[in-house]
Each structure stands twice: as C-alpha cells, then as structure tokens.
Amino acid sequence: MTPLATSAASDRNKQPILDRLLDLLPPTGRALEIAAGTGQHAAWFAAALPGWDWQPTDADARALPGLAARVAQAALPNLRPPLRLDATAAAWPDADAAPPFDAPFDLVYCANMLHIAPWAACAGLMQGAARHLAATGRLVTYGPYLEDVVATSAGNMAFDADLRSRNPAWGIRRREDVEAEAARAGLQLLQRHTMPANNLLLVFGGAGG
Image 1 (cartoon, rainbow, N blue to C red):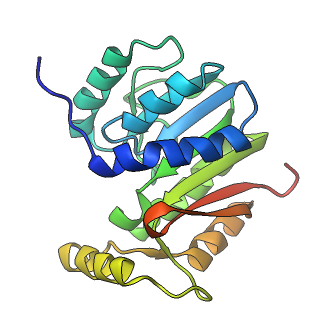
Image 2: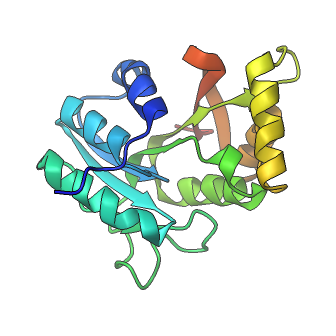
C-alpha cells in the first residue's frame, strides 16, 4: 500500500484546532471542509465529532486520490468521500463532480488556504460560505494572518516573503482585509482565537445567527 501523504503542520495543529471546535460546535451538525489537502484534519475531526457529518473537498484534482485514500483508511461512517470544489467558482461543488448540495451546512471549515491562493479565493470562500451556511452556521478559518494592531512575528514575516517570492499572488493575508471581504458577503467576525505557531482561528457568522 502506498503511504499516504502527510503534513507535519497538520499533525501539529489538528488537536489545538479540535479543542476550539469542541468549544464552538454543538453535538451534531453538517460540516463542509474547503481545501482539505491530505485529509488529516478531516479524519481527525470526524473521529472526534461522531455526531458531525463531514464533507471534505479540494480544488486540486491531483489531491483527490490521496484524500480519498485517507477517507477510506479512516473508515468512519460520518466521513464522506471527497469532492472537487473550487472556492472561486460561482457554484459549489463543481457541476461535473457532484450534484448541488441538498442542505445547508452548520460549519464551513478552511485551514491554511488563504495564503497559498490568489485573493479571489478569499472572496469566493466568503461568498460560498454565505450561500451554503445554515442561519446559525459558522465559517471557521485557520492560518497565519497579518494584523494592524499586532506586531508580526519574525517567522511570519519570513514566511510571507518566501510565499511572495514563490508566487506573487500568494502571501499572508491581512486579517482586516479578510474581515472586510466577509462583510461584503454578509458575514461578520464573531471570534478571534490566538493559536500556536503565530496562527489565528477566526469564526464568522451571519449578522442574525
């Protein structure tokens, strides 16, 4: 059996993120994960949240076989086979990948995507989450951010420079810009949590939710 692709960062951060999710989420619900990558978060969270139906997705068709293998290995009844979903698309999921989602989600979860994607992915994420979240649903994002009133760590400054040297469309996003993009989609920042290794976990929801 071919070893599954793994991310050391995902192994390190999956439990701290889960701890926040356990505080945030009710016992049951439906979750949509954007940019699931290796599937380590999907498998870890689905195992720890048996009352949650977890749908992993990724925009990169090359990632889907490994993601599907991770799902198959986990063999969890609440972890669904992955779908192809491009956050920038006008409709989720891709029309040629699956039929439209038949019910709203209580959680849209996205980790470590915004800084390795063009800015359009942020707008797409916010607009798509606003379309597909239940009235009281939450969008949770995780990753590094720049902030106006918080000094940027040396590590994040170096990381940002490296990202931009690799692709000018990439880079650590300014939290205030992400928050403004959410507002344009009808979402507001409800919670901001500091996380290990200079990351943030942000929780967004609708104005009435």
